[in-house]
Length: 249
Image (cartoon, rainbow, N blue to C red; front, side):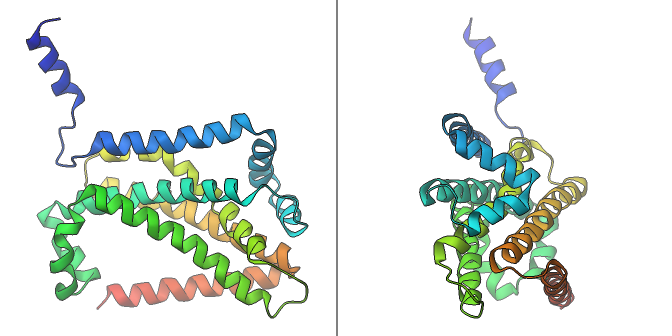
């Protein structure tokens, strides 16, 4: 193979969009997928819990309530995988649209100019964004577990942080499906169709995970389903309304 052919092949493989760091993100996503597949293939119980969690969530969360669940180490790995999957999607979208001058007005809509201007350089740093979004996603799972633990103080029964942590971590299992989308997202053009498709995919998985949190909470605390879903829908509607008001500013 001569040098001209080698250069031509590299030119075809290298990303042609301004979204540099594609191969690093690709390796990151493949690494998370590899860890997930190793957990599934090397531990039969983990594989069974994956299936039961998705197919029969009520029975699965009943096992969590009865403390028949995997070690916290594997649950933490699952939480990190889901956090990384969500972090890649968010970081890729933010980085891709931040590099587009036409998208600046939308960022100014979401953030005051005094906030957006200092962090503009950070939004162009793909690696820093990946680390930040992954970390914030994991902290969000931890925060949900902490809120559930505080709620447990007003519920009959003895509950530990490990119980609510298992509910929070396993509830967001559908987010791991984002890894498949993460493999192609950095190569897509950052235009309106990509934004709409990404919001639809992320939104659908988020809603699925949100209602799994409600189901897991209801099973753990033995709350009637209609009641927990009613409160959950009201809370989600209130949050959506507040976001809408914020974006209208």
